[in-house]
Image (cartoon, rainbow, N blue to C red):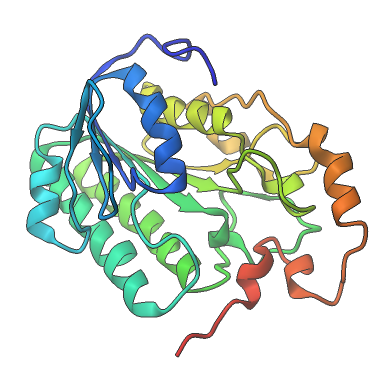
Length: 274
């Protein structure tokens, strides 16, 4: 973990972290408090007890009134909340589409001007693994989850153009302690680099509406962040030290498998759902 406060001297009065009980939310919960006086945490899952400097505010994204109350008094938002995997349409609709609209409407009402939105690499999952893409290329979602994140990127763009709410959309790759397979050698994002990415998005002087791919400094990569350089994200970790172990676990690939052909991996062949 990086030294608290080492990434920036900018300090917020109150930050909101949604999805705080999820995998990445739990990781950031112990990190973002270094950059604010109060860290407001929200989820529908159990959040445990509040640590010093924390506020616990459970809220459902699809509840417009609850979201309006949640955003009151907030300086900036790190939005990780929502339905985080490929699945049936209805829960994705409620959390990732209606819920995101409720969050941005609440941000507009309360004058919140900076949002870090957890988008996903699955917005572009149907590009091939032998292609390198940048953030100006068309989206190619690999499922309903990817479609919902593409909606989120467009909704946040509209709220910037109409209402001046700046958003950095993080197309997060695979953020785990270490890469689990050969695909993740390209998509891996370390937890420390996740922190660096979020804090860069929060503290860059001007971001407008920016799309940035959330990956570490991996030798194998499918994503080009040159058009997001103004955010100032500089990854320091790499999947390369894990390569020998990953190759040993997965010495051969089935090149007839769409999950091996396309960047979205197993998401390209998950579903449909009844």
